[in-house]
Length: 427
Ligand code: FDA
Image: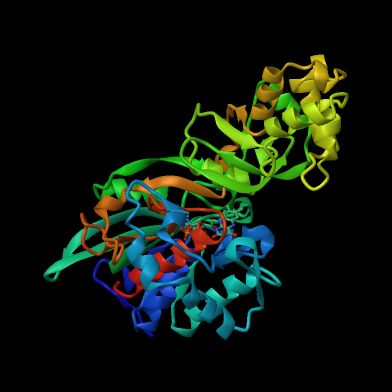
């Protein structure tokens, strides 16, 4: 496959994709299969770094049950077309054809048996098989358009991103130019800057007149600064099934107390729907109506203590350390008082708290640990069928850079594959 150099000394490709992550690689292999000459540029020293760190190193690469309801964004309908044209079994088929062993975990989540590296190798092998070129350490200096024949082309200038060794050796970075008919922005979000995340996708979108939905860290643990924060930190390591909710949504999943705040699937899922300053509610005993239980015990076992009743519920019992801490926090003054001597109102109030602990997070851990970035390129300005910009012919946005955010559970990768596929079919 030969690449032409044009008059301005830019090497020409049909398609240039910025970002060798999940969506960029999937778009590349799809376009490559159609015989398009494809170049993928990435400033990182390795392709697919987030794939490698995903799912605790085993990559939760998709989910058996993918519905538009598993995604958020200003336009909830935007994701429908791509997700229906590229359902999860398409990706599962590719995984199986590469003989990658995988397993299902709860809620239809699919993980590699062995390593996330299997998924990355599969994508890179598929790219190589169809002649896709991947250039790493490529810093994008600028992108512009210029008239060509009867249309327009994109012209990109890149320079080699110098590593520490290069700088120590006094290596100079030289610029390289590329031109293309189709330019795909697959640069992901802002989460985990140490893994190569940058805001370039948003900057390029704005350069071409696109608007952005404000971005925020999402699928991220909550932090707390007040007394509740102290209580939570003291319980670090404890995990239990809860119902976590706000006014709009509930998730029945485990919560994890950490040294920084509250994490675990319940909290990460809720963070997708959380606005700064909002109170969240945690039902610590979702299988029990605690008020009903305490009032019934007051009648049947009036000499019992609250902690005895709560510790007795063996199947649903709160972890001992949590129970002791909650006692100090919520009913220290009546901890040794028999139920018979506690007013019904107080038991009712306590039951309501345990079935709906109201907490006001001070914030989240932010982009440092967030799995995704919420918000991004406004989907109203992009075709939901092709991912092409409505404002600039030949420009495409795919994956997380768009205002489409999935739930925890393989949905964000499924969006990356699906948006990569539909764009790859047309670029
Ligand atoms: P992605 O981030 O994959 O790729 C963007 C690429 O653009 C990167 O290679 C980056 O280096 C490159 N880039 C950025 N700026 C650039 C610049 N200035 N110049 C050139 N290149 C640039 N999802 C899921 O479904 N299941 C899971 O198990 C997990 N697990 C998980 C764990 C952790 C720790 C994180 C951080 C995230 C996940 N995710 C996940 C989310 C998932 O990784 C994410 O949604 C997809 O990788 C998004 O794919 P994209 O292609 O949009 O971006």
